[in-house]
Every structure is written in C-alpha cells, then in structure tokens.
Image 1 (spheres, helix red, strand yellow):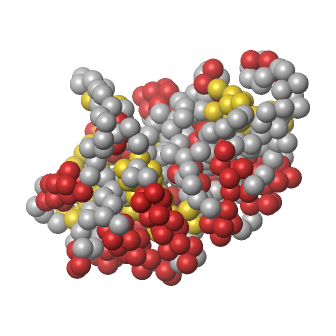
Image 2 (image 1 turned 90 degrees about the vertical axis):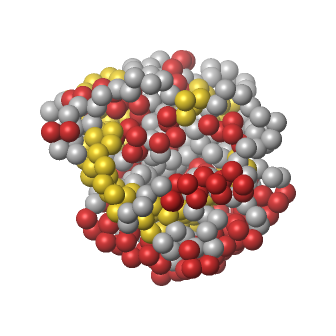
Length: 417
C-alpha cells in the first residue's frame, strides 16, 4: 500500500489548496489548481492484483488504462467502458466518471468499479463501494478529485474473445438521418459513435459517418501489435494549422472516401477506440494558442438543438476537426456529479481564436441550457457559474463530502468556493 507521506504533502503549515493530478489529459481546468498544490499521483503506478477468472483488476490510481489493457486483453478481458484515449489514469477516469461509445449499454465507468480506498487530507482512509460507505462512493465517482485521493481501485472488466472489433460504418446524409440510424444502431450494437462534418450546411447539415461495432469472435485472433511507430507532430507551429480550409478539405475527403452507404471491416480494438492515440502531440496542430473543446448533452425531446449548435459554429466561421455525435442511454447516474444523462451528446473542438472563440462557446452554452441540457465540466475551462448551476443544479449535495483542503481552478470559478 502507498505510504501517506509519499502521496500527501506533509507540511501542515502550508494552507494552499490541494488537488490530485493524474496524466493531465483533461481539456479543461478541473485538474488545475492555480495558486495551490497539485499532487502528482502517477507514482501510484502498480497493478496490485488481477483475477483472470473473474476479470477483476486491482490497481493503484496512477496506473494508466493502457497498462490495464496490456495486461488484460491477452487474457481475454477489456475495459467495460473507455474514453477516447487510453493514456489516462484509473483514478482520473473514476474522478471524471468517464463514458465511452457504449453508454447506451454499459453506462459510465463508475458502474463497473467494485470499490476503492479514499485518502482524506487529515490522513483518514475509507473503503468505498456501492455497499460500503455508499454515499462517499457516489460523491467520489465523478467528484473531480474534490473528495480526496483515490489510492487504489478495483475494476470489473468485460470478457472478450479477441483483440479486434467488427465495425460497420454507415454514411448518413443529414442530421435527421443520423437520428434514424442511431436509434436502430443502439438496439443492435454495443458501440456506436459518429464523426460529423460540422461545415456541411442546408440539407446536408449533420452529415457524417456512423461507426457501429461489436467485439470480434475468437477466430479474429489476439491483438497483433503494430510494427509502425506512432506518428508525431514534431514541432509547434506559430499559428494553427486547423482552419476552415484545411478542415474543409479533410471533411470532404473523409466523407467522400466511402462510396457505399454501409461498409464493414474488422479492425483492431485499439484503432477503433483510440484513433487519436496513433498521433502523439497532435494538439500541436492547433498552434501556440491551443484548442478548446465543448461537449454538451441535449435531451432527446430537444434534439433539434444539436442542429442549432452546429449552425452557431458555422455562423462564427469556426471549424471543428473532431466533431463527435453519439447517444447516451437512460442508465442511472452512479456518481453524484456524473455528466452523462439520457440524450444526444455533441463534442466540438476549435482552434483558440481568443475572444471570438469565447463568445462562440458562450453561445453554445446558451443553446445547451435553453434546451435543458448540460455542459461537460472536464471538457471546460471557461463556463460561467450560471451555466454550471443549470447543468448541475444539485452540485451543493457534494459539499458535505468535499475535502476542506481540496479545491481546483474549475471549482473556484464556477462556485466561488
């Protein structure tokens, strides 16, 4: 077990706020602590046990999801839920209660956490599970690191027969067609996600490629590691290479490359779940000012607002390279502050153009809130307290569980606390 002194600062005279820090892959400031102390949890990097019969892995919080995959996949197990990159820590994934392409079937990652140990700033520890200290479990899953430090966790994995998935890609010609195909796809497939051409207008608004998948049978074979090293962006350009011209060209090629309405392929699980992991330092393409991302969830009853979001970005002449659309199921929230809820979730990313981009994001917030939706905290670095209140009107229920020494730049910004 990790020693207390190796995790928490020991100087009791330092009153600056504390915050656990994983691998820094969040797009926003939930993992930042301006003026405070961030506790690097990556030293908690041991896999403590793996029951290959039951598919239960016990690992310290700083273990990357990639390490769990490397251990479990050759033995016939995979993550039950995974975000779009495998280079996040287990503790960070729980603290954000990440979702994946199968929320309509499996819910969030927190639904598959058996238990964990929570360390508070006063040195106290408690084991939390859905049955033991259940209120602390619910507050910590999705609690953005504010309830204490997760030292280790037990995760229940998903049984698979191979290292591949059978993918079916459907070409959708409009947003209306996406909704029609997505409904049918969620009934038939465990994993569904769509890439959307956010620059398409008129009758083609929302056109894109909907990728459905199931884990492939044993005959597909074990995962064969790629012999090619990952691509990398070798330098940081002084300006963004992601603009309407370059993204427009990419969108046309990506949408047009598939001639048939539906195409089937067997691809490696890593390629399907983590396409951006194949390009290291890809964020450099956005230049020195970087990128911002906006993720919202819109209730099914107000799904027309998805089109409004796309049109707002077009009106602002903002192109999004990674535009992702998928549906959330009606699984109950495991974590008190978990983001997913039944509806349609749209993710957009933009090159940071300063005030113009901030104005656009505020407009996207306005459309989301008016539709009764919510903005994702761990993809955000600028939402207003009013937007957070509308997205999570129950946030004060977290206060009894929040560690008095723990805070974040995000938390202080949206709650003034």
